[in-house]
Image 1 (cartoon, each protein chain N blue to C red):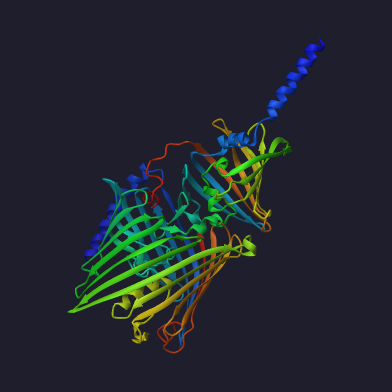
Image 2 (image 1 turned 90 degrees about the vertical axis):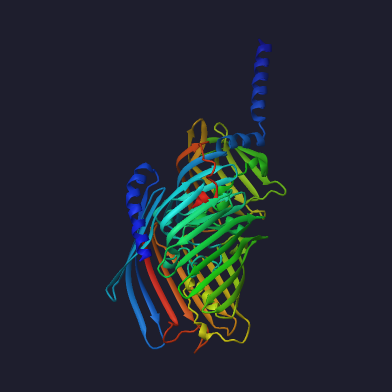
Length: 244
Length: 365
């Protein structure tokens, strides 16, 4: 009997030990499996909030690998489109029906006045290719058990944020909160996922709020109205011709 | 006369094709913008104040676009309508063909573009009528970034007007070769040029070369124009605050009878330079343009645009303020002040307003 109890305790210990033995890279990989979009069609609403004032923008985006096409559909910006291929950003002006290549520094700018930069919105590389990771704690966030993971940029990688601290749901492998830091250690932005949904077997953030911590009373809420994973995208979608 | 026929033909095609394509298309859109504004012009001797309202209606599907602008001037009780778009577009054998009233713009990011199809059409988001033409455009893409486009305009002012543009990407630089040929009963004007735009380190850089051949009554003139520009932006407050955008460009335009054509390109920026004010002292007329824009917050921005004649130092100062009051409502305030005195190049007078002020409230629906 004593032997059985010892064996049982040992088994539980081994099982628990193996459960916690997951590496940070594996957690991120599982999160990428959920959140990284190899190709997708997303209809979304962006609500920009500043000191009680709100602006609403609606958009449809198509993405495939390092290519993305975003079209705004709200009345103020109707027809404005952006095409990103690698680090090149192109903008379509609907009134003149003309396409202009934007300078590289514009990628850091807040997209349509939001707290999301063009790079945030159209970042196409997997995080595992850009950062090195470490589990720094295991803690609850809004009642969900989470891995708290620190990501430091890989040497030579071109990223918007030097360090990220992310709370990833242990069961669903979806990011619930993220803090984005500069190399100086200054907190730049905070991302809170307010609503998640399981779509086609993948947990995906539906309502995300980004706060720019360097500005007071400002935030941008990104709401996914509909999402289609791996849709059929015509071959000529990510071209200057289709932007027009 | 010829042009009127083309307009009628375009509208007929649109009217026939619209119901068909609209029902077949899932991408049908309609909307517009309503505006009310005040425009003040201050000449040497008189001031003009106009209060206006306007409505812009748009209707489009995958193949069809229709846009009309109605403008009412309260002061003179005048009503004007402008047909901005009425075209049918379709893909035939890998080419995109657009027939009817349509905008033709060959911008590449400069403040003033002397190589555009229509000079004076630079302001991409402004309602400049110069860029809307009656004609046919055929565009053939070779790959995702390279294309050739051919424009044939039908306009009673010309015997003919053709435009050709080749565009590609070389080492991440957007490069285009533009050519426009127009003939009237008394003259032939041929413009061609090259533009490029790309990045060097963190700055955007661009430039253009323009060549004009002007022939009239036994006279043949060649005029050249050169331009280089740079744009850069950075965050204030040690890199973490609001963004400041800076842009500057330098134009070198050969002084002869063809200069007048190149100066037309400033009309899009709201500035008119009479060639009679330009001296014959040097071979080139030199201009420097700058644009500074600062985002006050997510909703509002201030900008400061300048045009300086390096010949006499006279400058057009054009500050602007923009505030998006709600998701659909925007307030814009633009001021233009010509600092030159007497007959300096950028100065006001009895024919040219020295100060222009425009306040406009718009609602998009």
